[in-house]
Amino acid sequence: MSKKKKKFQETTIEDFYDLKIDKVDELVAALKGDGEEDTQELSFNISDCTGESADENLTRRGKQKQFDPYKVDKFSRIPVWIKALFVKFWFAGVVCYFIMFGLKINDSLDRLVLTGAVLGLIVDVLVNPLFRYMESDRKEYNAYMMFPFPFKAFWTFFTNLIYYVLVLVCVNYCYLGLNELINYIKHTTDTIHVGVEPLLFGVFTVACDMLFIGIKDGIVILVKKLKDKKKEGALNV
Image (cartoon, rainbow, N blue to C red; front, side, top):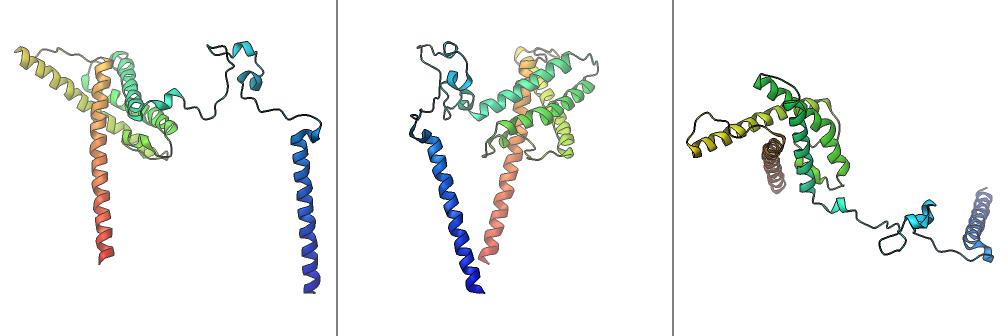
């Protein structure tokens, strides 16, 4: 019984490989055109691939534009820290322009809290997802987020709102300190020399934000080092 089963398996395996060889021969013949037509080289010209007119896809030197799968775009050549800080600066300036200037809120505390909450909302909904979209497998944008969690959670939404209210409190003290410094230099009192406007507001917001993120990153590094030392001590024992 076992001999018959073994003989059956051998014949089916042989038939299986025969079929595969035939399919490979058919594929090679199809690619070569069965010797009837010469094979054409693959064209990387944009006009040939898209069907557009060749005159519309010419370089300045009159050559055909070609696809380059290994070409690095100009945006990726910009350092990560420049892109990250610019995005944070731009969104902070936009929030300042539309919330602080757009909404006529007389109470300064209410205006500060509302602006911080809106900025936290923008960061959670737009800025952090944008960083996730631009990052690679190295997670290089984690150093520019206060809560760099790869998953979407409700608690990060509320923590971002509270966190950026605290950031704007720090920004408010930056303005107060700058005006006090100018008053001290000019020997004046209770004079506002520098008002709130989007550009300086964006600079102060990014500076305070990165200060808090740097403190958080430093604490995380220290905790990891302490854990590694405890593990090494436990292994040595």
